Length: 275
Image (cartoon, rainbow, N blue to C red; front, side):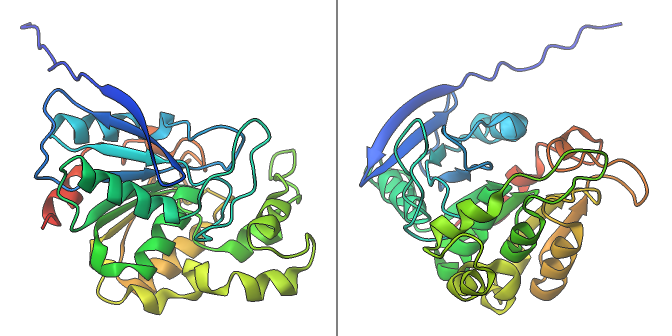
């Protein structure tokens, strides 16, 4: 049997600050500045910058094709454009304003930035959707992995029992802090978060939905599969299930380990929506 050699993928990683936003920048051996940046938005709003394990393979495909991936630290903002609770071990993020900062920085280093591509995971998917709704003309393609598309779903499951044992984290307190409401006051949060909740603003995605791909698991109780279905139905976004109905799909943390996940889907989407 002949030996097959895989091409080497070299990643150059650097950091920058634009405005008040901390940026991590990833590029490959060949950085094609005629391509828009891919702005990667992280998941869990914890005490450190986004851990990108779920997006490793997709990022390798993107950088090998010449894209520059910029990861801004938005913080625990839950879709809010500016408010982000300070992390225990570091400064607060800058909200979805950090996406605009990443776009500005891309232009300063000579990247094409008339549009940007967004790759969002979990809460990063929420932020990608919220920024897209507010800036549709500035967005090329949007790839969302296990996106949190319903803030109220997350509020309502906070602290409840997880099927199989344990309880969901207290998302609600973090969400209330980000949207400047009193923890526990659901009615106030409903009002404060209205403009930033994708599932309640699907009309804002008219004309953009065809440029959105959602990849999620049917057995993801954290974000709720039905929210992905509703969002896709109402916006025209493409929804890809990580496994057939009735089969394990990886839940919230590992849907990218199933056969349905392709590290090239985001690359194809972005290539098709370059300026």
